[in-house]
Image 1: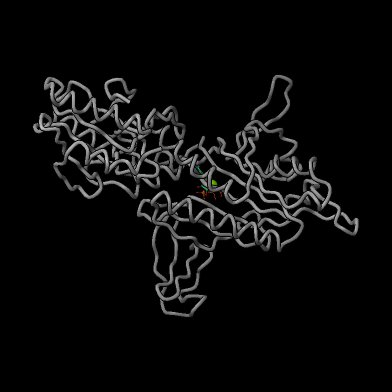
Image 2: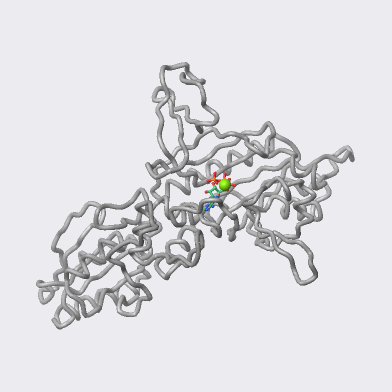
Length: 416
Ligand code: ATP
Ligand code: MG
């Protein structure tokens, strides 16, 4: 992509309402724009990061045996009455009526829709187990939308649901999802901790873990035992000493909940009548698990953890582009030619490359590159006539002058 044509405007100052660093930087670097409180447009750069996250999540979900579906945002109120959540879910639930005065909700989650789906599709133990997932827009009328994508009113979630004949099968599905989550968050370069969480409103006897991105800006407080690694949400671990090893004091830190895995059991299948016939011909409720990842929240959690005073620093796996080529002066033919040749070569290799071909001062280009946070920056400058470039590692800040061929060799790890 040529930056001269890229639909983006970088901002010198962050709008006053942006509280957290990730929110400020995503706005300043032109990744997102606000439409209403808690409602955002993803600009081309933001969309690319979101898409890379989606692809990674999809790959790990399919790798763990889950099948992709797409359920609607528009959901009939009757389903929510059946689960008895229509009234108790509270003001976060966005309600509306169609032209015939029928009541609907904009889905904040999909337990109701998916359980009704399984109720219609599955009648015998022979068709179980099954796990489905979707990557889909959710609506929650949050009381206090904040920090940009961290708490939106419209946001992107991956939600998966497992269906088994019993708790043993559910346990296995839960383990598989838990492991897929570990792989996803590691691949994103996230520093995180899985913590025991409170079963909360849904209740039940199942296990329940939250995946927390560790950072100061997080709204959740976690307690971690430095001796045995026990970690729990503040609501769960109220004791001063570690409930697992008994050691002295638990350490407190802040986190952003990026994912949640939950053994639901039969709470929804009983309410909505999703049952199957077992081998003896008896009717049994399907045993369910649900598993969420806030994909848009994850994007900003990664941004919160990966930045410096200049701007964002994307981990390679989800960067909008892998390589950023800067032409120091487009008026210098040698610089322009070298950059164009490199851009053509890298594009042909399938490496996502952004070429700063704008007629701007070098200072402006370096500043924007620092803000945008593409991991490798290649600068065509004074030594361009000798086929030499500056190789700049955005994260470490290290700089080196290298030959064109060497530059191509180094970035070939990004080949599609
Ligand atoms: P929170 O306590 O932060 O409100 P939650 O417990 O309501 O989260 P879940 O219902 O478990 O969240 O939803 C699954 C995932 O969706 C969460 O782990 C989180 O990553 C994401 N998520 C939830 N609410 C929002 C929101 N308003 N904006 C962005 N992501 C969200
Ligand atoms: Mg919530």
